[in-house]
Length: 244
Image (cartoon, rainbow, N blue to C red; front, side, top):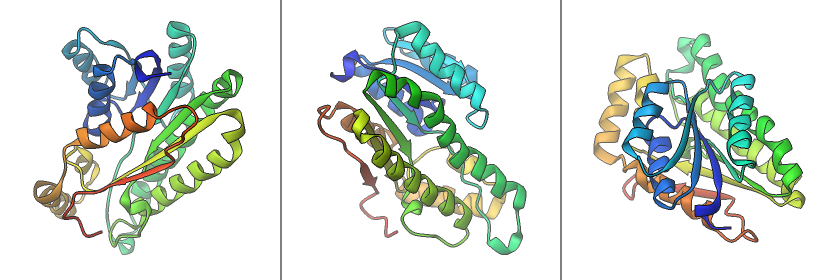
């Protein structure tokens, strides 16, 4: 089944990698159900792509009922779900010594529980269908711990483990998994950093190295468009000049 026949759900679709993926997949005529907290951004994205099949819906990925409703919308509208892209994420950063426990909990809620909610919401449908594809945005920080990004790195290490475990549990049900691990990308992710010094440092890195989110979106499309007998399980996409 090519992308132009697929029903795909995307979370974190209001900006950055998510919005770029919406644009790339609609160019290939996918049918999309897109979710994010900022509904007005989703509506604007839909209006900017008038010939595309896009169903926007407000969703908080930390709320399982919201994610379940997103899946139900896809089923009600299109009768199936071919791919689910867990893309929502945040990146507050601070040294461990700061003890920013509220930020730590927020990171875990969005980056880890959000992914688990997506899996839990869509997996019964995919098992029943005996096919499907679950993708998640990870990070190069999920491959190597980075000072001041330790809890963020930990959340992304967790996502890697979850996705590999999911692959091993569900390959016999013809369910594919893909982990997308970007390096520095020019997105709004820095806005989730409360500490202004760290935020400015991330902005400076993005200005120097950050690649266009469309590069990540094209990797997502490549994985989804692979033959059903092929699973692209992991992709790491860095700027050429990024060291870590």
